[in-house]
Image (cartoon, rainbow, N blue to C red; front, side, top):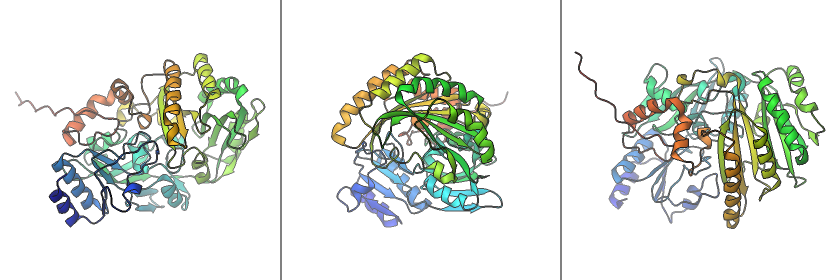
Length: 460
């Protein structure tokens, strides 16, 4: 980056520009995953859309690698890089709720806990992940599974419109009527198409919900997993059942937990979730009525703490066969860190009834998102924990599909897996990418390679 180019950017920039050696630079370069330690040449904390345009112009003119950071929650660390430019949207904190229209307008730097606090004040919510510190924009662009997906669909199914700045600096306001191809691509195509500076969502009435964990000892894990496998297909749209093999933070021993929720009348939920709560002899049943924001944050501690060192792998599966059950139970018995986990998220209900071609998100079948997650506190131990996870994943992967929830794709996943995860929508995504980002400026993501638009043939 030439000094005169930086000086020209600084002259018209309203936000904050941080380079190595500046006060605040080390803090600004950090992301949620503490195991990602990169040093960009410049962090541009944009104050408005004009700043976004200026920062993009610098990246293009100087040939800089570009990262776009919303919430900074990307486990692979896509929100930062070495030697390039980080376009930081953390100042884009606008949240405007219309309780009559049941919509919310949200800035690209908002976290889910910030949005949920505002929408719940009006008794409303929209599907938004399973922890509260995820960035709204990043989760949505990759599809957006969450605690409301069975009843209300994915985050992308509730996206009404978006403002996006493309590689050429143009600002687009898109929805089903305005630039529908770009709007379609944003709903599941990740950050491949531009910088999303604001989003508009459909909201739903969500009051007190039923939620919590039912915890069993690890020596019953195979039995619990087989019960869970049979339970999931019986669930109504209002119910959610996830499962985790993890370490009990109080006792310090591995356990298996059913993570349950019901999005409807609490009395109905008590009956629907009764089989899961009465199965076997649990160590503890913590399922109870609670505010939605409490259920949305119940996995935050200690699992989603900012700054933990992380490495994980993920894939979908439509079946939990006995061999996979045996493998993951064995993995849990050998955790190298008490913060590591194996998690199962069941995709069902309204999220699976949207036609595959309706949005760019293609995983529209009932199935489990399976995640083997390594987490630890001491960076000096990274090699030991990542070696364990790679060996563990090699054992589990042969029982899983060759595709994944795109928000959980790792940087070392094979390109074939990335392509498979976009499914039959990949070709259309590549054509739209070629139209809006032909040089692949936005490539730090589960990347879609652009295809140049074909010239129209003259009419006969």
